[in-house]
Amino acid sequence: MEFGVQVNVYRTDWPTIRQYVTALESCGWDSVWFADHFIPPGADRPGEALTAFEGLTAIATVAGMTERLRLGNLVLGNTYRNPAHVAKIAGTIDTMSGGRFTLAIGAGWYKREHEAYGWSFPSMKERQDRFEEAVQVLRLLIHSTEPVDFHGQYYDLDGASLSPGSHEKPIPIMIGGTGEKRTLRTLARYGDVMNLDGWAGGGMALEHYKHKAAVVDQHCEDAGRDPKEIRRTLLMPCYVTDNQDLIDRAVKNLGPGTVAGPKQYVIDRIGEFKEAGVAEIMFGGVTDGGLERIQLLQEEIISQY
Image (cartoon, rainbow, N blue to C red):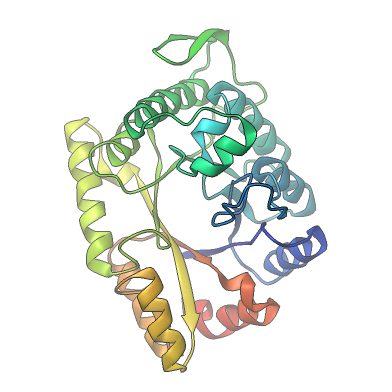
């Protein structure tokens, strides 16, 4: 099993982010991830000035700061950018980093930032329609060795190519989201990596993950695809603590099965997900506790795997 950290890029500064990335690179972690919002989620008051580093620019900078860590965003919002432009950026980052980039993307959900920056915020149905078409475009560009023509409802390509970009080692496409009818179907048709977000509804209950994984398997079967082609990952909020008040608050805020408890409890919970087929866990929220929390996870938890 592999382990990464989603480093906070909101309400912070670049020296702090750099400090975390340097620690992850030097301490043997496998991956680093940034979020992708233009306003920190929850900062809904118009005019509220809060730092939010742009996701792709930030992860590209980290590519030049590191040599080993895999890189990505959890996850890019499709409504912010044209997918062909995203593919071009992804190909550039992946080439500069020596093949370490994962292109992770979702349909987009945060209405307030669309209002703030003048972007349209379509209905859920249209966002899902756009998302499925965008991921189809991304896959065509990443995997095709010839210029791509595509004429869809929302996106058009006329002889577009992904250059730079390696077709021998295609950039993995990760799909963020858990919608069973559309998002997970899009994953089964065009994606390479499943990511279950533990900040979203359902928490980190093992049965919740197993159910979503089974839905992916069924969509793969319907699409004529081997489910083993889909790598399974989790974004896991995690609290190693003996403090029952903190445990209770975490469960109340995040849902049943939230991974909050003493060291052995956390080790056992991670083991359950490993047995269920999860290949990688990205810990979320851990940088709020300082470098000591990353060191604790490294020394006390992931060293067991």
